[in-house]
Image (cartoon, rainbow, N blue to C red):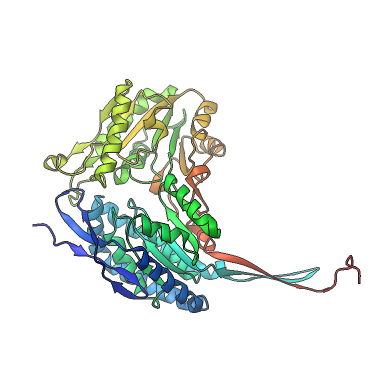
Length: 492
């Protein structure tokens, strides 16, 4: 018997705010099952949340950093205690396998703890004595942060914004995606309960909510993770008031496999497969296209298929043997199907991968069996567009100059990976246009929250994670105290 649907509310100025209109969130494994309901907030309610954050900022910005850390650490402990149940909720509403949902909570908590441990160092004023006098550089809170998070990793891509914003003295209004609104709302509620009213606010809704969160003059900074097309609209909406921005956007991340890569390394080949199909391929930093040196191409494909068929097991996310669950929503299913069908119509070979463990679910849920696409053209849509689903093209290349050009001609540059002998791989990596390049691994397997993460070109603006991700929520304030108050070249 399915679980009873849950209902979540907006959080404005420390209070839960019920709404007249609510939107259902279905279970991608069983689309006829409603997991819960999220509110459809109005523009007026969004303004109330922004006003509450704005008023709270006037006092919160003066709070002691030790108090902020203590409050966040209490929230972290409560999140740890709640993870087993919240991970199940995330799995039900999102479709990702339970181990994957638990892993998302682990990454989120890891980042929040890093932020707590490093924020004092990041915002410590710098005092510089020099020949002209003395300069003090402070790192002050910005103001009200508008945070908009996506559905693919809703917990980690919300806490990546919330933790640094609060720890550096800002207040926040967060809007989750309607495709995965439930578990993240529970997380934000846990955090909000540890902070003064108005410091943490939560709203849900459609376009009018998003427009208010990106254009309201009381918003000082926008932190957005999502599509590049949406980001362009956000930048336009924010332009009238010149808001600070951190944008982590789309990517078409490539894996480059050099001729000295060992195709018989089973663990490396498994890492490659995971980098293509974790979370059913719905991760911004998934390796979405694979270029393999022609000299090892045939053997690589053979070993890749073997590794994929061992690791990929499709079915119910709560089945402990399953590694790949359903796609999150019907629209994404249709988009991925269209890319695969387009490739087939142009002569590409499509190979199904892995095992179906729960065949009775395949026709009713939003399932796609993972596929490998061979023989696509370098400029086919399945290669140059972000699939965001369980399919990957593998293409041969002849020399490094060619593959670097193929990589860099993309409008995107989020992450990338190079596979081969380490020194050789690093040499190639230095020529790649991307925010992050991983060697002999890819995607979240190579993510380290201690270091900055973000994209170049149309994959984003600014960096998250690391100390740089904390400093992104501060304003640099320079206070000069000169020795000589009068300049000699100004006449009396």
